Image 1 (cartoon, rainbow, N blue to C red):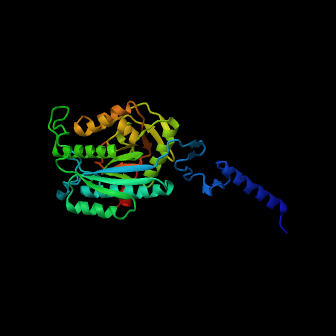
Image 2: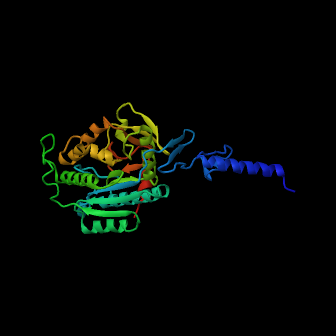
Image 3: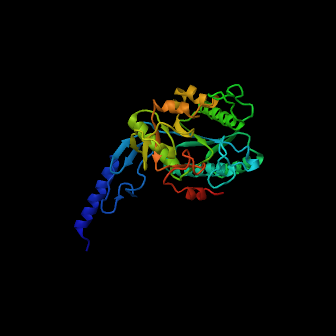
Amino acid sequence: MKNKSIDKKNFISKLFVKITRKFGYELIDQSNLNIPTSNRSANENLSKSGSKSITVPLGMTNITNKINSLTIIIRSYTFGDTDNNQVMLDQNKKRIFDAPKIEYTLRTIKSVINSCEIAKKFFKDLNIKILITDDRSNKESLSRISNLLANTNLENKIINIGKDEFENDIILKDTKGNDISPNMKSNMRNILKSIEIAENENSDLFYFLEDDYLHTKDAITEMLFTYEKISSQLNRELFLCPADYPYLYSTIDNTRLFFGNMSHWRTINESLITFLTSKKMIIKYLKELKLMGAKRHHPMELQLHKIYEKEYCLSPIPSLAMHATNINTTYGLPPNFDWKKIWDENSL
């Protein structure tokens, strides 16, 4: 014989769940942390893109700054790779793992593709485009990059930069009066190209990226959810940096802490030229961003740092990306991060 009291209890529970779901609330069973309204666990990603950000136990943030499109611009520099070039820009230091430069470029692109494809599971209507702005890579390197891009359904394109592009825009001496090197000129030419694309491309967000940043699988997802959430909370556009650089711990600076989607984020006053921001910010600070590619400052990111005096730039803790530089540089490998794991995960 059925226990009518149990049936009645189950009926009431199911009815309550339906009513709760209708009003947009979430219920959590504290005994097992299950959420009956969505058949998920409380420690999973509970946010819904463009709608709401949910953090247990902080509650819900309504999203007012929905992201519809993201353009990722990866600046590729492998033209010296015929000599197995693996040193850092304008330096003699070798990179971690002592691999040819093209290997870092390929693993960066692969990690970004993988991270974007995971993000698409949460941002189903989001238009993601990956652009590679390449400065004179050899045919073999370009072929390997093309083959990698052919394995994704994400919109992508390789844009080849001519040696003489921006010839009249780049000042050949730095702010100290010294001649800039061919490598630095290539770097500046590529920066100008990426800013030019962003100026003319229609996209809500742009992610400017050097070709030696390997991303965690959840990096793009976390950055997108965090941008939506915190920009909605503050009612202003932001800059996001994907890396937790070691040099950020070399001084004692005041900072503000935010909780993004699944990670902590803090305000920073400096970053390298790998950052995510909105089209609105690019137009607002177009002159300053172009100046980074036109004149060699010390540090090179000086114009960005001046912008951060007026705008929020946030960096994640722990890091969402590994800047694959020399193991001893403070501008590279993030602390408390499994560098070898992310390197192996993105092998080709």
